[in-house]
Length: 491
Image (cartoon, rainbow, N blue to C red; front, side):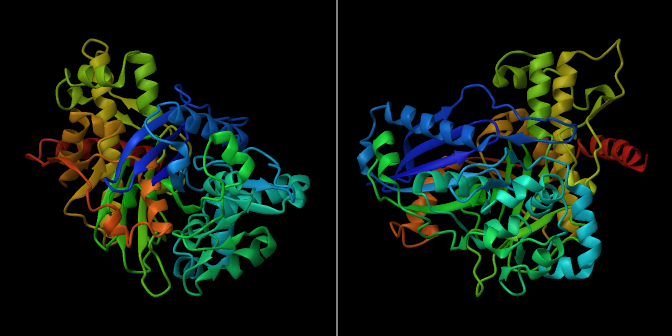
């Protein structure tokens, strides 16, 4: 018996087949090799094709099957992790009506701001735990205002993972966690928010059936099973956004536990048992994967949109080599880069900066001193400083971690970045062998009852390394960086 995990990333699709006995992947595949494009027909817009995701999911599963390391018919359940906050709209025949407006799209900021004022800031924060901001509800309202023909054809709206589950099973479902990340969920009533529906004029019929995260969200269609050589009727038994799923894959489930990622976006995600919120919605609170009406488990999320875009941009311009070689070149430059500072905010508005389109900036270039190596190291330092800035906001709101867990992936593959991160934030990092698609597969095992609990599903999690802070040599760098950011924000 095996488990299949699907991770619908912004850059690519990754799948893993996991043996529940060992809790490790026996085969993995990613498709495509190059990063997927983000469509931007207007400044600040960001879209991707849901049909592209579905084609790539099939390609990735078929690549995994070709490894010959398992029998596809032995897969017993499927789990899905997905890029958060995206909007997918389908008609009554389940045809996609438009490209998905994805997480880093900025077009609906003003719509969300108006909703925050009209519904009432205190009511939004107490019931939704967030401003409607630039989340899925506001994106749907943008379509309603600007693409009325598409809106009137819509039979259901969903998030990216719901769409892939629909393609696999023919059924459309959602969860409290998914509704909360879209800012459709009222935490006081534990139901879809009447305030949001009434203000925007959304019909309740647009929303799928609400099911627990760990539950059957449909059974695999025979036609799809035959194409992918899987067993018909196996369940999709888990769906969650990529950051709650990353926390799950790091066994971050209880209050006070904190996870981080530094991939396409930079995220710190901490678990709380309190219906708390940041008064400015700079960090956001959603229902975690193990949230229930009787056991509150909330995920407090800091997101930095520009992390992966800056990292890949710097590599393509200054070091068109592997990321590993890029990191080695960055390590050749001295700490502080002789005053060179980078603000990593060039991928849409940043929620932690009050939805300001700050942009990316390079400060204090000295043409006689600075080389490519200095720029590459300043990228690492600028990203770490952005994490510190966001972590300080989380600390203001009662989330003050003594340790952060992260997967040994993306920027956390870089020893240099790990060193800069822990010394800038002052928090040790425990590094684990983890992966979003593996976490989704184990989530499927929980939902299908193969594991008795989430704790059991991650009982064999492998810690690779602990990185401890050493001194405060990065504090002056951070304070200088913060001053530059605050000057930019004041303009």
